[in-house]
Amino acid sequence: MSILPVLFILIFPIVLFLPIPLKIKIKYINRQLLFQIYNLNITNKIVLGRSSPKNTAEKNRFVSLINAIKSSELKNVKARFSVKVDVKLCYGLGDAAYTALVYGAICSLKIFLFNRLNGFFHIKKYHDNIKPDFNSSRFELEITSIIYISLVKIIYVYIKLSRYKRQSKKSNNSIDSNFA
Image 1 (cartoon, rainbow, N blue to C red):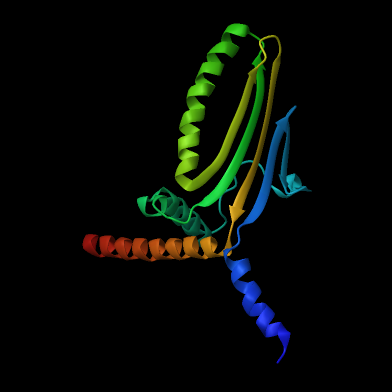
Image 2: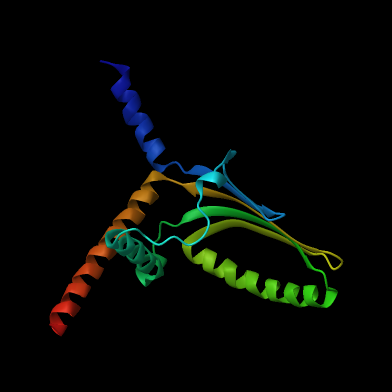
């Protein structure tokens, strides 16, 4: 008997259930955007600005994905990805009074953003460092995160998305038939 099938049977469940860390880093300094996955710079691959979907099928897929994310069914998905987030923000508006006002707004906004992020991910660690610079005008943002992804969770979320898409198609068809 060959050892290869036995080795495959032993390793496949480990790969399927073991979370794989995906390190993402976003930097915005001096009007320069840097987007990295691990240490691979993919900033040049991203097209900034609004681009509309080219055809209606692509547009419908995008709209259904947004609706699925907003739906209460996906907010209650038990297979949320674990994430660690580290945010560093250094900013200044040139005027100390405006900088202080914005600091208060940012501190209020970060709680709201944390709760929204916690709705989609299981946050294992969250750290933020906000430094107002009262003497100069600048904006520097650095977000470093590690998302733990496992194949089982990806499959589970895909099944939930496809189920939601089928249900929304059925409800749209029944609504259309009622109006006809």
